[in-house]
Length: 302
Image (cartoon, rainbow, N blue to C red; front, side, top):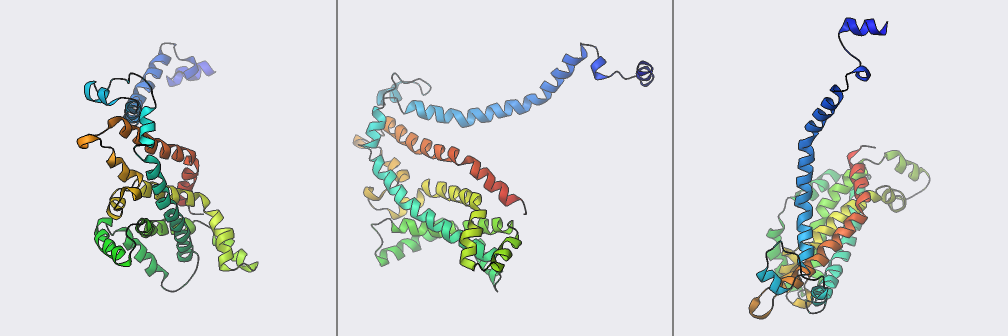
């Protein structure tokens, strides 16, 4: 019966197909997926090759940079460039200044931004839509427009010569985006949870810290990591408000790797860039899963 049916329809089951037809089908499937594989390989080369080139360059001497081809390997893998960058290049001071400017700013951005997002999305009060639009308008203001007025204000108040201008500016520029994102994440939290906490006698402050904040913790990690990279990699604001090398952040400090007559010391410079780049890369890889959960949590209406 099976044989007669196959003969009448003119088709042959896949398990009864001739052996020569199977390799042909597999080859066609491989050829269809070849452009995607080539594209992925090109993207990997574009992403990984600069990091490898930067890492190998951090071990080269000044003579090798000037006389050898750019693709040549270093003659030895000595850590002298890293030692010189950490000591003579004052990378330790620049990293400390970056941490002092970044961590308080990040703490204020997260605390105030999450609280504002909770108030704008969970709490019901008159005028909250207008306040949210004001925060959205803050996202559209270019940071370059406010540098000169802020510099004049900080000078008149007497904050120049400290890291306070960086902390205040980073907090102010990071809040609009944080408030908008956190309001979006709180929109995905079921309202019944907060209603149940209110019936149990919890006040608004307790509901925020014990219920709202823990439920969006992955989103908080996502927003905090985005703001951390923005603050850590900033050059314009740090270069505007720091008037001495003792206050320079790591991005400003990388501009100071010059020797006699202004010659760039490439070996220590590459080593300092490696310390900066690979340090932040390790941080991202460590928090990568939380960031993915936070992005997925904001994309789904709960």
